[in-house]
Length: 291
Image (cartoon, rainbow, N blue to C red; front, side, top):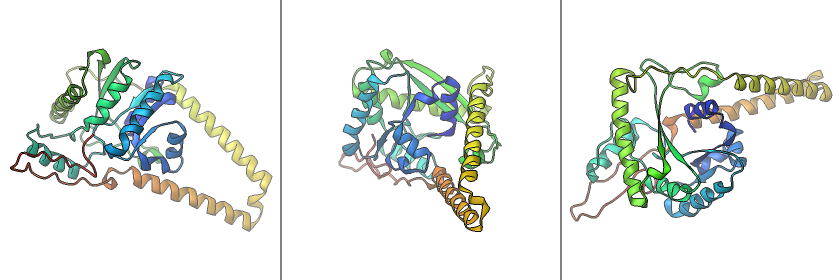
């Protein structure tokens, strides 16, 4: 899940009840992946033949979710890189689709399934577009751990669920049209440094989140102090060595997590083949067909 998305959920007051559709391997990430697993996120293998039933079952469970929730669905299906953009452009050109400049081609099967299964109990869809201003560093896990801030611009548009088309094919077309509009919106941001002529609204930093962080930090520090005092780990060289080894393991796990969070290390996208002369359509992006 993108860090900018987490920031949005935090400001909306829904971070504690936010769910997402994620790649299956994400649940094995140290700490954060495990928390996603226990929070009943929906994990997919990015193969529609395997994921269709898993996705539909996971979405139906949300009907009885005890609290208001947000479900994050990243319709592009993978993290953005220039190599993937090139593959998406070649695919679009070969299939007669609008050639994207700033986004990837959405995988609409999963989105259409989500709309179909949640139409009766989800009132709206929020179309979120995130852009990083020029000369600003992107938000990364490493910057967060270093306490370094990042600036992002966010454009949000609300679509009522009842206004969406009824059939899956029409929903898929609606989604593709939204991404064409999103592409043009990002063109404007690249040219003008803003999404629109309206003034930016600085959301600031919520006091509640600061209090939660301070409270948990104090609790963990107190617990660590009591633990070391009770075990006397720091009173002998053996205890010091054991503590250092534990710290090294935690550092290694965090390093793995940081590497995993880098978009450059995500699964490479295969270049889509040109449309064959026989007219048979081929759909190849990433490791499986678009969905």
